[in-house]
Amino acid sequence: MFKTVRGMRDLMPVDAERMRHVEQVSREVSKLYGYEEIITPVLETYELLAAKTSEEIRERMYTFKDLGDRKVAMRPEFTASVARLVASKLKNEPKPMRLFSVGSLYRYDEPQYGRFREFWQSNYELFGSDRPEADAEILMLTNDLLKRLGLKNYRFKIGHTEILKGILDQEGMDEDKQNSVRQLLDKKSWEEALAIARDADVSQKCLSALERLFGTRGEDAFKVLETVKETVQGYDTTIAAVDNLWEILELVKDSGVKLEVMVEAGFARGLEYYTGMIFESYVPRIDVALGGGGRYDKLIQLFGGEPIPAVGVAQGIDRIVLALKKQKVSPETGKEKSVVVISVKEESMGKALELSDVLRKSGLSVEVAVMGRSVSRALADANRRGVAYAVIVGPKELKEKKVALKDMNKGEQTTVPISNLAEAILSGLK
Image (cartoon, rainbow, N blue to C red):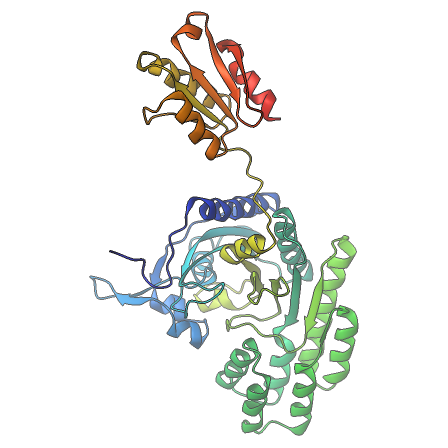
């Protein structure tokens, strides 16, 4: 008996419906905000995908040599592929440029709650603006998506990569050690991160600032930022980062959008290309981020393009579905299986198929009973699967150009003219 590869899943109809619903709403939001959809390959060159991701992700990429002896990898995230596209085929497009992508990604992680080796994301990226209103848009877009999906009690954890980088750059810590610190902070390993800083012979002032920053977090965003600013006096780049984050959050506040925010000074994300604001969305008591993103102003240059500032977010479709299920929020996808057409006799099957086609053209989702069951068994099956209406096509009614229509919820059956059938069903579904 064959089984799925470890970390991969079969999605049954209910789960597939939930996933596709989140994908559909993600796409609707992309259109509302002016993001144009692109499709990039699942398979890219290893060099592209490894160029500016974290060492941890590099080690967990699915890599192999193809038949041309080229080292390739399955994409572990979208941004590298999108950056390649922007640096090449889209380099002359007018700015700002808003791009949307959605699909499956692959990492050889240890399968656990909310984490699989094949997973899905929807991705929004805004290129061309280095202004805080672009960052604010990404936060507002994420809030809009989660709200439209009906998710409750979600929060934003927000920081700025230059808060720590500004200090460590001024202290002369090399990039590799900074990346190690970032990886440890991403795992909430604050003591280990401090140990690396000590081993790098940074000043006592730096160690004191780091130790205080790692514990500086709170829901009163502007109060937290005031505390951070007091802590980092003398580190000009860090002060500028605090001012930038303040301006972003003030713009969101002025827009009238209310975000539940936790500002965390020691917050870091695993990817190495971030240069500004970073954030994650989450639901308390669900110990995985639902999505995350931030600013990355130098990535396009890495792939041979012109300097183009950028900010974006990846929404974890699987994890959002998990959170919605936890909260018992069902997708509002309508009554897809609203009608079943049942032929009483074989000689009326052609008419049953004709009626099903007419009803579909009216916008109804229609199944035809194709198992050769008796009418009573076909109705029992339709009831079991939650079908709203059954159309029963019999020779007697057809002579009068009518059919029997049964409301499966009420258990009521009436005879209606075929010419009024679609109207009768649609009015009943309202």
